[in-house]
Structures are given as C-alpha cells and as structure tokens.
Image (cartoon, rainbow, N blue to C red; front, side):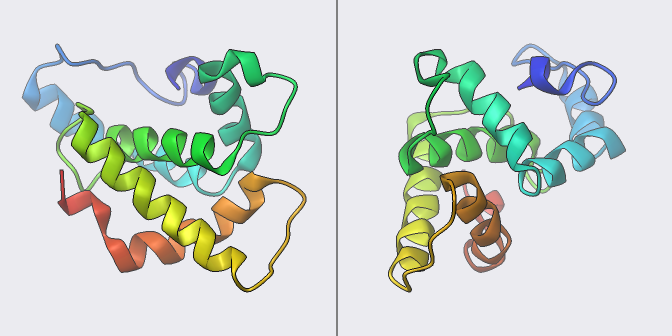
Length: 136
C-alpha cells in the first residue's frame, strides 16, 4: 500500500511506530486523503490489489480479494481508529461485512465492468451503516 501511494502521498508507519506519532499520522491530511482515495479510485485499489496478489496480475480480482484489500486498508488508514495492527478477527469481520454488502447489491442485478466499480459504489453506504472503525 505504501509503495503504491509513495512517500509524498502517504508517510510510512509500522507496528513499531510510537503511539504519539501514530495518532498524528492517523489524523494527518495525507492519511485522510489516502483513506478517501482508497474508496473512490478504482485504479489505485487495483494497483494495491495486484501488488498484494501478484499471481493475479493479469486478471480482475475476485470479490473476496477486493474485500480483503479493503479490510486491510480500512484498518490501516481509517482516521476514526487508533490502531494499525491487523488480526484475524478484525480482518475477518471486515471481509465478511464487505462481502455481505457486495452480495446484497448483486441481488438487485446491478452489473459493472469489474469488481472494483461495484465495491467503490457500495463502500460509502456500507461504512455509514456498519461503522466498522469502532470495532476491532
């Protein structure tokens, strides 16, 4: 994710970053802009997805792959959450919530050229309803 954004758009942090620095980073303008861009720029999401799932470089990523990428990005970048550490429980909960949203939209037979456009359209609605950032 950091490599896709680049240092000019998103400063590097990791699990060893001091909590004061992390709190500043989470609420910085750069981090907020990166978080917003994840859910509005399908090309960026595609680049992140293909950097994580290198074996899928020439393919569209599945809904599961996209939900996973969005879950990790939500944990790392969401300014309403003070943490950046991902654990099985927090990732699974988010993946499941994103997949439920994707499937509920699919029931209305809304078809798009690729998975990313579908996900981007439902993310804002989903985050407003589920407010995942308050649960870890």
